[in-house]
Length: 140
Image 1 (cartoon, one colour):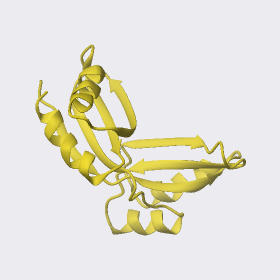
Image 2: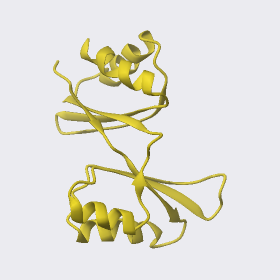
Image 3: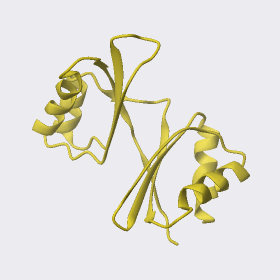
Image 4: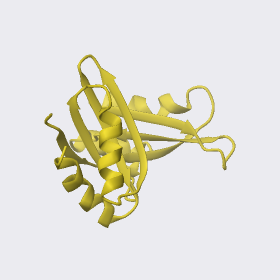
């Protein structure tokens, strides 16, 4: 099974936890032509009334400018890899197992299967774990 592994920049912004809060962040990106592959939004439990949204990719001058104006910034603390592969049973366990065997701790994972493809976004806390992760995954 061939994994396509790429480094990605994740952008993050604070959102108001109310109707339209997320739209206020995403609409300017759409108007600037951003073609997002991943959007994750959730409430922030320790800050009532707020949430956070993570998006990737932000590419091109217009999209970067719109993202910055909407309050997005590159989430420097989220060193992330995008892993795409044919979807098959147990793939997630093989990915997390390879990372665990290499002694790598993840700070987060988001994954989805659509049709016969799977895409995972893996985030790491340290530059060391990030650097080791790509090598660990290549063994799959």
